[in-house]
Length: 375
Image (cartoon, rainbow, N blue to C red):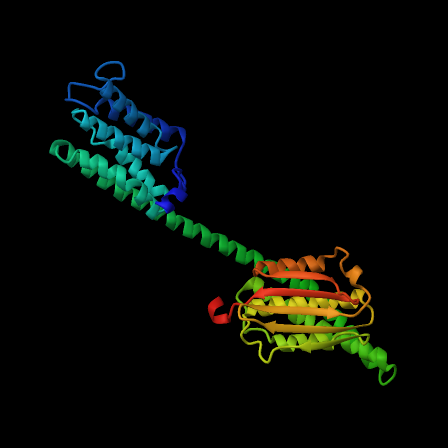
């Protein structure tokens, strides 16, 4: 019953509660209540007759009239009125319609298991009370079986409609992602391509002169091409599943090689990084990339150590430098916040702060999920 209690006594699915539906329920409730007890020439009344008869008629009326607003309480109340009427020796001639109509709605708007757990006891009680009255039991059984079939069919149709709506939503989102990817590629891709082309042309014009300038232009070209590769990878995530897992070791080596001369980097990597899932590997690469960018921006001349360690349940990343820009690196830019968001989405944590003997350190722990388990 724990799952049933979590589901609650409220409808989880859509329920028609328009004025016409409510008025129809009120009309059915009135007819069902007044013919509930006695022979064909007798009607139940809230003003006349035994107290039990009047009370049961009121409960049946309320159960049917209010079933769209509280289907589970309506089911229990309608079944309880039937049990009380039988226990009082009153004939029941409305086929326990109150519990049957509420049963149909409960099965339609609640998940199957909670619905069955919540409906089993009241339905069994109502039918059990009528079991020794064939003239009342057979109609009640038929009505409840029909209600069960109608409710199950309604739930199946509701679930099928939900699947269709979700597929349509995914189709619209896929189209929007494709449009966004195209816009990004056209705008950013053009700018980066022009930058790389101009850098290459300038390098050729310099010839063998100005070695340092030529080296800087080579770095601009290389960084531009890597930026285009990153852009293509990100756009691939927007438009569909990625391809092969990224070469993390190669990507980190390229990042270290692209640093300006004033910044040197040492990579301390495990013998193999193949156990990392593509998502985790991409998060590690982005973390290291942003950390190195911060070093270039804020640390001045510095030596950077990038260390990766694979534990049994996580990959640990540490990027530390001995530069002078630790305080500036914590100045509230978007880089560190972006690191924390990216790693946080994977259940990891990021810590950043100044080192004891100068410099800055970024440390992250990302839960380790091998590719086969992640799939």
